[in-house]
Amino acid sequence: MSNSSKKVYIFILLTYSLTSIFFFILYSIGGVNNPATFNLIGLSMIIPFLSCIIVQKLLFKQSLRNSFNVSLKFNIWFPISIFIPILISIIINLISIKKFGSIIFSFDSFLTNILIGLSIASFSALIEELSWRGFLYNELSYLSLFKVLTFISFVWAFWHTPVAILYKYPTIPLIGSIINFIQMFFISLIITYIRYKSNSILAASFSHGLFNTLVLSSCISKIDSIFISILLSALIVFILFIYEFKASIK
Image (cartoon, rainbow, N blue to C red; front, top):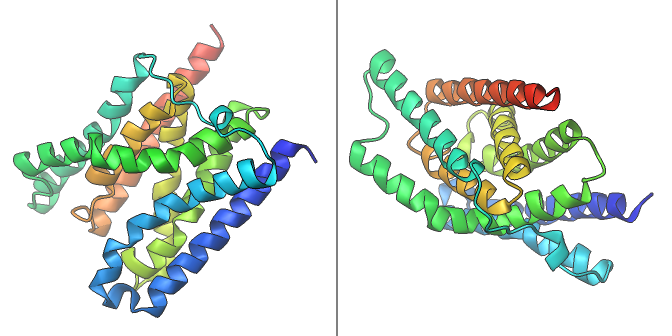
C-alpha cells in the first residue's frame, strides 16, 4: 500500500472517529434539546483539519504546505463557484413562492446571506476545505477525475451523518440521514469539480460557504424545498458532466 493510500485511510478513520466522539458529547449534554449545543456544531468543521495535521505532520513527518492549494490566480471558475449556489437558491425561492405560496428569503435576507456566505461562512469553509479538497484531493491525485469526485463526495457526505441524525432530522433519523447524504453528495460533486477546474480551494470555499448560507440554511428546512435543492444540484452535476465530457474529446 502506498503512502498516499495509507494517509487517506488513516485520515478518514481518524476524522470519522473524532467526529463521532464530538457528537456523542453533544448528545450526552442534551443534543437537540439543549439550545446551547447548536452553537457548538460548527466546531466540527475543525475536526478534518486536525486530522490532517495529525496524519501529515505527526505520523508521516511531512510538510503541510504541499498538502494544500490556496491559489490566488483568478480564473472563470471563481465567479462560477459563486454563481451556482446563488442560482440554486433563487430557483428554490421562486418555486416555493409559486408552488407553496411561501417566501424562503426576502431580498434583504438574501443579500445578507450572500455577504455572510462570501465572508464568515467562506472562511469557516476554508478551514474544512484545507482537508477535504486540499489534503485529501491531493492524496487522491493518482486516481481518475471521476473516481476522485465520487470518492471525496461519498466520504464527505457520509461525514455529515451525525449532524443529520441528531439535529437536522431527529424525528426521522434513518430517512433523514439518507436524504441528507444524497443532498450532500451532489453538492460535494459540484464543489469538488469547482476545485478541480479552478485549481484552488479558495473557489471551493466560496462555493461551500454560499451553499451553507443559501441552500443548506435553516430557512430551507421543508422537505419539499430540500428535494428541489437535490434535483437542482443533480441537474448542475449533469450539466458539468456534459461540459467535461465535451471538453475531454476536443
